[in-house]
Length: 639
Image (tube, rainbow, N blue to C red):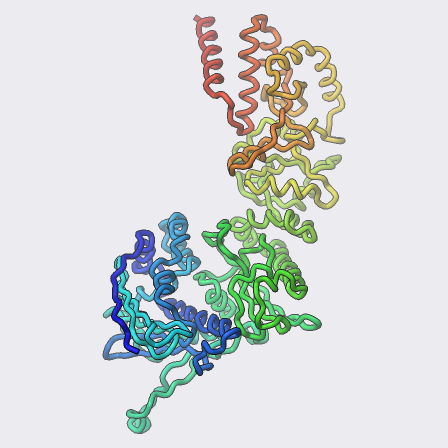
């Protein structure tokens, strides 16, 4: 069948051109990486073919020996990386190469910092490894045909990486993909066979697929074989790294394998390699990355480890093998017991999967516990990147709640700045004699938490309070209500109970003040009306005139703000206004005889309390008007 000519020139999307420009300007720290990326892509294509062929072995087209070939043409100045994997259709070329996962491109670009080292790591995470070819090539040609389509459905993609590409339908006899790099004049070193072999040995030795190069002959043998068909030889080990004994694998090999499966350019923070035998036999190789991927919080993005069954690749993001709060973990699970035709639906209802998931979870938590104990500085790095994700754990994983709680870190009134370095264990060790609870405050920013008037009595008594300002913290404390037998207590809820830390004289003075200043409290209650539940003297306040407190079992004001910010309804709760009767403002208010001025002062007091805890006023203009009136009266009185 003849191929009907169908060639077109298409423009890259604007965001894609920006990414290309970054890559072409050599953000990769090591030029050799381009070969690792292209071989990695070829390996993925072969694994996808092997998986699809489980249900349709006709896709092999009679050629079941999967391999990758690296060839040089010194006269043409080209380097070609070929595979006989799944291949691409014309539309798949447009979708995967012409757009670079465009749905996430803008988010990716927003995460770029201008720091070349950091940005190169992001490029790896973003999965644009194909474009690393432009580090050494000024033009790239891709020839591909998807397995199962006829030879007339080949496609040729070509671009110099400067804004546009051509796409043409061509004849291609074999399935798979050839990536042809037209090397730049100053990159001809990559036409040297021994140079290429050393790079493959360094970066791709662990790939479980043969990487082949032409066998080279010398002297008389070369003369004898010059007209013979080319012979190929394997230049990598081609054995699944995770199946080798740990004693045979160097740390560098583990790191290279991690970079291969994650497309990250940095070594991982930690890894765990285990073989489980018995009723459920499987091997796991799990990695904790050094940096969070830019799409960690993208609900559309799938996360998970790679699943193999008896060394056959099954799926990329097997999310059932790892809880969602550990979605940053990369790695491989290879089972001997699962069926080769396992699907995502089967994974949801498979007891073996539940067993593997539980074991994976315990293994990662154990890895993090060891890191926290033995390498606190490394754990601090981990926490800065992934702490917010780990905070989802106690709500999702009841069985490991206590272990997860031990891994959490917080800012505190005893900590330095806003750094989240305080563990619950360290907090308990520092608890005051007689202290029975772990105190915390939630707010929408570190500054709002640290400077809240609710903390004044705690500072006075030198009692440590945890400062929680991440959105996820409200979700966390609603499920983590105690640790090591110590209840977690919000300092903004209910009547303050300091237990044995409470000063009995202060409590008695508060009760006496409530009686002596009853008329002031009643008057304030009347002025504020439905805005509040009650007005009462405060044992929390030392320097501030007032604060707002919700009921012990009510939703916190901060959680209500978080829910409203994400478009959800929050139940209306009326706070209690606590007042510091020793404060000059309250004394001035009590002496006020003008009802209108008393009302203005009372409303200003309430609005200030709202602002102090990060709330928004229902009527800011009215607050400003009352404040201006008060200032004018003071100025006139002074005049």
